[in-house]
Length: 325
Image (cartoon, rainbow, N blue to C red; front, side):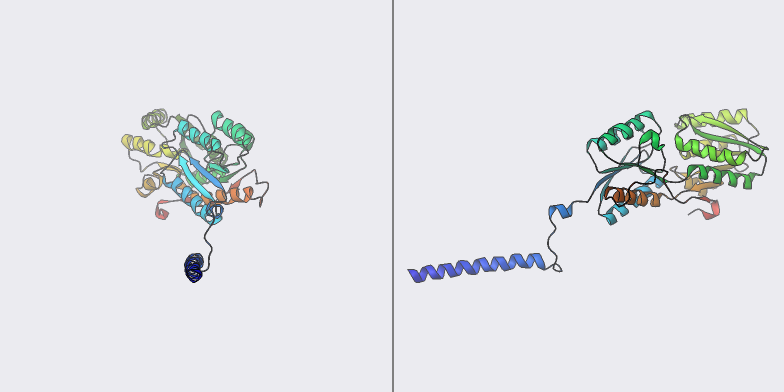
C-alpha cells in the first residue's frame, strides 16, 4: 500500500513538473520577453483629434501624422469629426470627449461662443488640456494650451505677394470668405491687406458668402456684376474655391483672371493641376498632426510646462502649377 502511494505521488510530481516546464517555455520562448500586463498593453494617454472636415486631403494628413506620433509616443488616439463643416455635430463630439474624460483633446479651432464655452469652461473644469491645430482661437477666449499650425497672417501676406508678382501693381481683387469671418480667415485677410496697402493701384473688395454651393455661386455672380473689371480672386475659405471658379468660368474664360486659395480645401490641389488656380498656399498638415500629439504628450508627462501660448508654427510655401504634386 505504501509503495503504491509513493508511486502515485511520483506520478503527480512528474505531471506537475511537465506543466511547469511548459508554462515557463511559453513565457520565455519569444526572445525571453515576459507577456505584457494589462497596464503595459494600455496606452499611456488617451487622446482625441476632432475636426469639422473628415476625409479631406488636408485633414487626412493631419490625422495620419497624429496617429504616427501617438504610436511612437505610446499614446492612444482616436480621430473624430464631422463632414462638410457640420458645426453642431463637431461640438457634440467635443462634448462627448470632455464627458469621456480623455487625457487630452486636439482639435480644429472654431471661432464661436459655443466652442469657447466648451473649451474654456467644461474642458477646463475637468482639467483636460486642449490644443488647437490647423486653425486657431485666441488663447484668452478659449483657454487652449497652445496652437499648432500655419501663421495665417504670414500665409495671407505670401498669397498677396504672389498676386502682385502675377497681376502687377494695379488691378481689382475680390476676396471671398465666410459670412461668419472666422478667426483664421480674418488673419489671412489682414495679411493680404498688409501687403496690398503698399500698392495704391490695387483695389480690393470683400465678398461674404454662406458655404452652400448655391450661395457661393450667387455671391460670385453678384460681385462680378458690381465689379466687371475684376482682375483677380482669392478664396480665403478654400472650401468655396470650386463653386467660385465654376461661376467665373460660366461667365467668361477663367484664364485671364489670377485666382488663388489655400490647400485646406478638399479640391484645392486638383483645381491647381487642372490649371483653374494660379497658386495654392501649401501648408504642413502631417507636421501639424505629429507636433500637436508630441506637445500634448510632453505636457501631460510634465516634460514641457508650460507650452508656448503663442503657438508652434509650421512651414508654408506658395505652390504653382509646375510644382503641383
